[in-house]
Image (cartoon, rainbow, N blue to C red; front, side):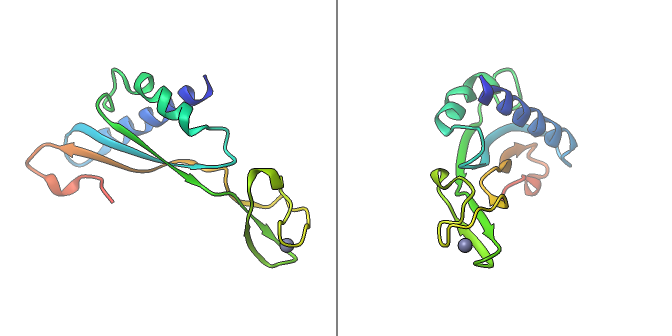
Length: 128
Ligand SMILES: [Zn+2]
């Protein structure tokens, strides 16, 4: 499953970040992802794969939150970012000009992570 591989990388990235944190991370509460609507990840499949991806990791009890990022292209004729839906297939919906310049929509990244740390230093939780 494609999404499981993506999430396994997410868990690995969170574990790495936690290992580098200033204080001991005891538990990851929540992992938030930004996922472009034109990325290959499907939110339902991400949520479905999460319990498998997180098991036996620092994220074992963490919730997953997926925020979909709408796709947009930069159209040189309109000289701005124009939102597209997946069916416009890299063509400006305003003027019809083909453009390969996708500015948003292929994101797949960790937006933020909320975790608990040792009580000595609660201020360093990576929360936003
Ligand atoms: Zn245009």
